Length: 137
Image (cartoon, rainbow, N blue to C red):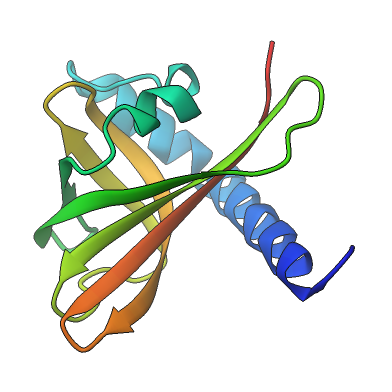
């Protein structure tokens, strides 16, 4: 690991993978129940980059909803056959959702589940980050 940021990024990816593996069966059955669900594997960095600045409706586990704007799509160094990027969303007010799987809905993409981590930006704005690190076929 080159630095602390790289270590933390890798730790976040490992934590997300563990959570997805632990909840994978529930997430897959949830995705299969909804007709308008997007296959997350088909949504890459370019797809999200084209939607920068658009709003996503997010429903947390407790049923609370919030509109989040896709503020940034950050691409990491790419190795052969690996796609690494992160999505940064912003919402008004305090953190409405804790770290974990949330249901995102966008008019062009449909619905999909995404593991996000909340982090405050300022008194009026909360940010959420989702990290993608996956093998390309």
